[in-house]
Amino acid sequence: MSAAPTVCPRCAHDGIEHVHSSPVPGVWEVLQCARCLYMWRTSEPARRTDRDAYPAGFRMTAEDIAAATEVPTVPPLRPTA
Amino acid sequence: MPYDDLRGFLTALEDAGQLLRITDEVRPEPDIAAAANAAPRLGDAAPALYFDNVRGFTHARIAMNVHGSWANHALALGLPKETPAKEQVAQFIRRWDDFPVAPEWREDPPWAENTLEGDDVDIFEVLPLIRLNDGDGGFYIDKAAVVSKDPDDPENSGKQNVGVYRIEVKGKRKLALQPVPVHDIALHLRTAEERGEDLPVAITLGNDPVISIAASTPMKYEENEYELAGVLRGAPAPISRAPLTGLPVPWGSEVVIEGVIEGRKREIEGPFGEFTGHYSGGRSMPVIRIDRISYRTDPVFEHLYLGMPWTECDYLIAANTAVPLYKQLKADFPEVQAVNASYTHGLVVIVSTKKRYGGFAKAVGLRVLTTPHGLGYASTVIVVDEDVDPFDLPQVMWALSTKMNPAGDLIRIPNLPVVELAPQAQTPGVVDKLVVDATTPVGADRRGNYGTPVHDLPETAEWLTRLQALAARR
Image 1: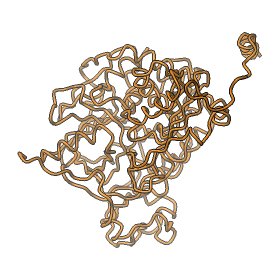
Image 2: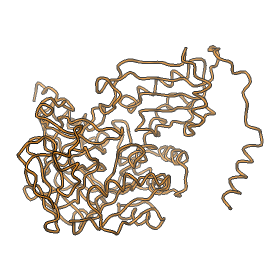
Image 3: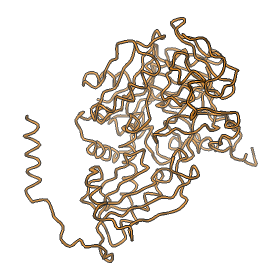
């Protein structure tokens, strides 16, 4: 298994949280970015786990997150609620 | 003999030579998704795939491509695996005539064997989750039947919903769900959010094969999916009460996840490679808090690969998209002969119809756009004559080649609703729609030169039967 990543492959944020370890010890970990919530397994190919190899078309920025469309939109509360 | 759970169906698939066990060790990614991506390319008799030797796991059992061919779809409906797609649709239509068949409550569901509750919930301890496409934002659950009720009318079993929606795993007890606005769960969530409430949900995974078909059928709002499952099975669907929410869930599920969609909350979700063969972008979507997971020991994780069509998704939602459209059109227009909505969940719909009078075919085509499914999907409707088989694309192309004159046969309607996932829309959710009239004009419509058609020789049908019999004996 390669060294633990220091930044999110998708958004380059440095806050990475540990989610789960392989039932067979030491084979892989599941990690998650604290900002863009990207979640991956450390045993996946570099194109999914390594910032340098992560395709430009799939990258995400803080601006992308802030501008993400709401689906569905939150409706107004009913007057009686 | 209907199947009461997924395991019974997997055994039947194996007995029919329609399940392939991958016994060599595989990587969770990208191997399992890549294999499921490839499987439908084996053709109309492609098998389901079963993995139980997955690197890093000790008890993983993963079933992929369970509905991923016409052969498997036929077996799910209890038909011979050689049944052609068109005949499967016809059989589906005949069974729907007996709708509804009420479900039956059954005790001691196998998923009651094990339970995790509250802070002990960790979905990764229960399911061998795997990732699908390169650009996906995380681990997804995309073949679960999600149960919810109308918060304004919770005792109305017709308004209850069982549907398949994309679900992203965002933490040990946190999920995201995509309630497409044209789908029933979006109506439930909207009502709950207007009331300032959470929406209780039960997410059921690893179901008998008919539950997956019924849950992905675009039924009317007040039609009950379990009652459709009953007619498709030829026996009442067995259901049990989920222990925390009280929601009716399949008796035979491998896993039942209960919790709530947290009202008035949105969070970044996706992207995800979708049924359109394109990724949805990252969007801000509802969040689910898991409160309880019930599961069979060593559950089988049934998962679905979707991407560039055709994949399992296309087989799962081909017949069951065509049939309700046919039923709804036929109710108003008995002249309608057949509907093929097999392509990308009915973004294209092909209808064959007799003509009552000039202009009638265009009216039928327009009606497709206002059916419940048509509202959010049908973007292009092709109408053909009654003797053109919509399931025979060379015949449809012949009709387009010879019957359609753009001068009068294209009706374009601007700014109609469509699922936000439809990539052709300039503004997501709104698109221009097209009705193509590829029928032979009848009076008072006198366009074209159709006086001398060539017909099959009178003996051709007899010879076709004879040749088929001879060919089958080779």
